[in-house]
Image (cartoon, rainbow, N blue to C red):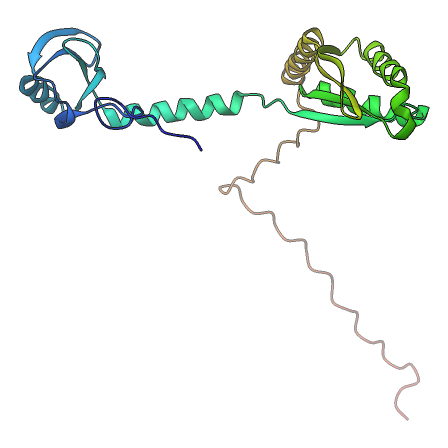
Length: 240
């Protein structure tokens, strides 16, 4: 269980003392822009901070006298938290992924396992390669060593050995880490592709919509009406 350390002055070491929580009788005061304002009684330092509508923050409590700075402490904490969140997003979490083989693994299975290890290393992860022995296979450990040595040779372009092959119970294993040159090559390729995509014109952009008709222009006249149907011709025979 993680234990939160306590500041010997009282309070958590994560938060600085502010305003009336500052116990020193006098402090070395630093202004908003970092200017040195000299050593002042705590009451005068608090008064200066209140005049600006800001906080008095103890930034160096172990100094004699303690160093305090005038600042907006709420805004300062917000910006610090924002920086921490951005730093966490940029962190690369490295995982250790395991691939298991047998001393007499078939060629097809071996190729599949090697492909998986390449994928793990290409994602900046580490790979634990484990050879499992059963029964009488324990008397032929050289077969496991041979498998691991073959893997080292086949992955020399993308991997470096972090932990050399060793025996543990009925398992022989080693740990491979990504080759730094390979990772740098992947980063350079990704940057080049991003730059090329940004420079290339956008393909398939929709055509400009036709201009709206001018409302002030006269409306087009309607086509002339079709002529009425001709009257029925009289019966030449006449009435009977």
